Length: 117
Image (cartoon, rainbow, N blue to C red):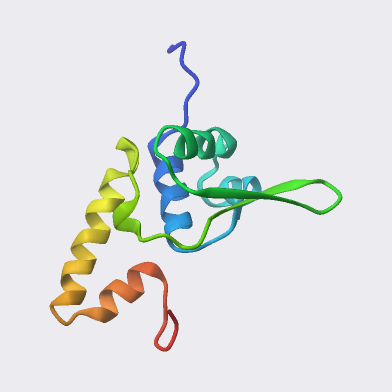
């Protein structure tokens, strides 16, 4: 058994993807979608180790933290953690396809439908 308590790759990848997609996420989202328990730690690392502009809002009587990227930065400027490097590669590939005329694939990857930005 390892002495380290860390987030698994799926949680880190999921967090980065959700933020890049423009989502506002909570610990409850992470639990429901990837069965994770370390969103606060992942966000801390994204902010302090990787320089991601993540903002936290505390809402409701339970004071639940909602995280989002500030100002929807260009994903190409973000430093991805090792566990989420495949996401950066996937975004670059989709972007290349979009530049080649496959804009729909890129929009679909980001979850954007026709007419939305």
